[in-house]
Length: 479
Image 1 (cartoon, rainbow, N blue to C red):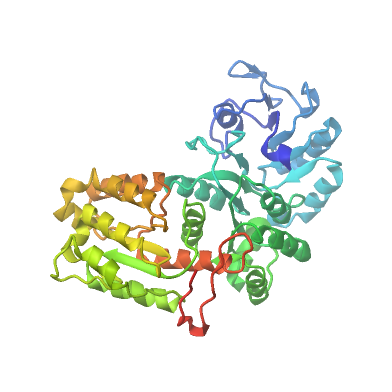
Image 2: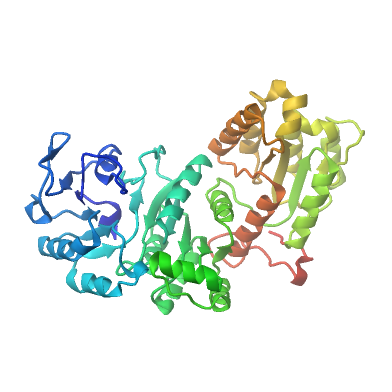
């Protein structure tokens, strides 16, 4: 698998000087991505592209490349695989569709029989992304450093969405694979590989079906023993399964069996794409909660009450702060519409970044708190403390850097039709994320992500242990 992610040379079959036409311009994207090895265009229709010689077939290449990316009609796929096998090419990625997802499993069988020692990724997928080797398929990918997160997607669209959304949330990407119909290379193999990849700290996946249940479970066990695995399952209903079959030729399994297997093997299951990104963002943060004793601070009592309800329903708690901690918080505020117990309601002081930073610092010394969640309301900060918009977020970041406990800001925005507020939100969000803080837009997303991460880490041998909440979520998860 190493040469799939770090190929020394690449051929693009179906390369064209013309962009568009219903296919990704792999040749141009890879040439412009910073990939260091040779990239050979292959297409009998052309003699050169941008001054580079175009080869008529794979047979004409000057070397046996590690990876051939193929965008040709399905009827040419079998001849392409035969040529790749004869040439000694290690991997062939088929962007091409028109196979099992439209009922033509016979062609898929022929491809597998003809491949020899050549491995096939796909067909019907957008392929491989590796930040380290600069093997990319998204022309707008802008991350430079090597990240911590890996994603495996059975859907090319979901895979592309992951890259775009991860970048916008500044989730650091390491490797991404769109694997499609998985007639040869399966999600099982990819999980097994990533389980032993020390540069990857969290594995996320969108899965519609698996090909070998026992092997998949074994790979999952290996992976979840050392790092969190977050899975979004497609086709969990009868109608969704039917859609999956027409999408990638997936064969659905009974969802209650799948659900039980995932829970038994410590896999984090999510129900939405946004939840998947939330958990991955938390898993790749600099400090991760090791217990469910929450310290919450912000302005306004209603939000504090709602978060408290959510926390207790999900097996977490908000312990009352001891008097010394409360006195420390009270030094910067007056006893007017405020409460220092926990949740800490700072009233109108909660719009002041300086007061918020002071309160966070004091709460860091509380022995009965595992994670600190400051709540920022962009609507009110921009109204009452607009002078702090530029400097305030940096004060929070610097304070969080000095603290022992993880800080997980919630940065809410309720006005949805103001471009200036949106610009401010993006700016502040970026400052927090560049500092490695996980940032959530509402209380439910934050609590959900904490619950799922604690659910994985509680039985891990490589992470600080956490105690599972009592039945009904009434007991507190502690460190």
